[in-house]
Amino acid sequence: MSLHTGAVSKHRSAPWPVWPVIIFVILGVSLVYIAKWNPYYHKVFSVATHHTLGASVITGSAPFAPAPSWHAAWDYTWSYFKDIWIALIAGLVIGSGVDALLPPDWLAVTLGRISWKSRTLAGLAAIPSMMCTCCSAPIVVNLKRQKVSTGAVLAYWIGNPILNPATIIFMGFVLGWNWALLRIGLGIVLVALVAKLGDMWQPAGLDETTLPVPQRPSDSPLHIVTRFIHSLWKLMTRLLPEYIVLVMALGAARAWLFPAMTANLSHAWWLWILYAIVGTLFVIPTAGEVPIVSVLMRYGLGVGPAAVLMITLPAISLPSMAMVSTALPKSLLAKLAATVAIFGLITGLIGHFLL
Image (cartoon, rainbow, N blue to C red; front, side):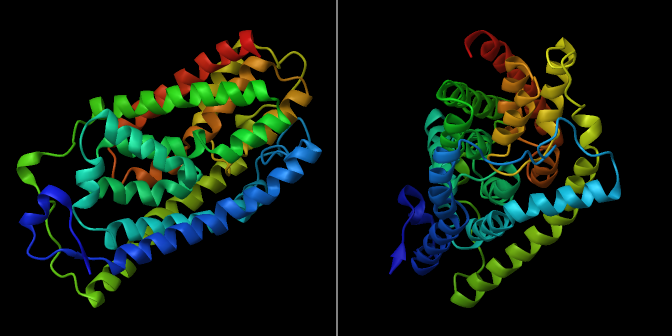
């Protein structure tokens, strides 16, 4: 049994076998279930009862982060990876499957055009994925290598954390449903905005005259499995070392990036700008923004800067941008970071007046 890829199948010497696609679906669903769906399903009942997600990953239960040190770096890195390691494995495996198990030209035909349809489909695919931008980075890298349009790639990448339904539910129970509604509304706007801008910044969509995407040398089972293993190894060796170093560096610098909360500081205008920048660069596990905002507000943080963190912390981070820089231009990532930071300030203003 084999898969055809629509209008372009006539260009192929042989259709793509169906068994790799079945394996991809089984792997994808199983890993996301283990990493996300099952634990979040059980956690939501606890959050609904106790109205908390626990301590902040940045400051614990205190108004300040520990002083920069090797211990602070290691402590944060250990805490962070305990939260995300299963999702990171899922991202690496699914990303390898995108490269090796799916029909070579199918993703380009489905998501490669510069259009609202490609961006919308990619954004919708992000919702059940529910990953942070670091864990979804391996998938993003290989989506781009499979000729998916930049807008669709960004819709999937930013949509994962921003439109995460579990995070929004947690936010409703911990911070209030007005916060959840603000996150939904502005989250959709942010994802749509960066996706549209991505297609403008890098209009490298599908060129109908160049179909199909270059065919791989062999579709035999041995070659497909070999490509999968090779793709997985390449993702691990190219993405993980720099990622780990950056997580440790940010963990060590928490006290500099997030100053101790005081009554005088909590409503300072410059704090909005600091949080817009720091929130864009700092790395957190999925839904980590909820306890961070909750703890800081307990010590007096104003609604405005809290709303800034609510949107910027999950959207992207310096480690995740470093990971996808192998597939997306650094100039595009700089523009994306600036867009997220500015959008965070706008969110803070809206939150200041509405929440």
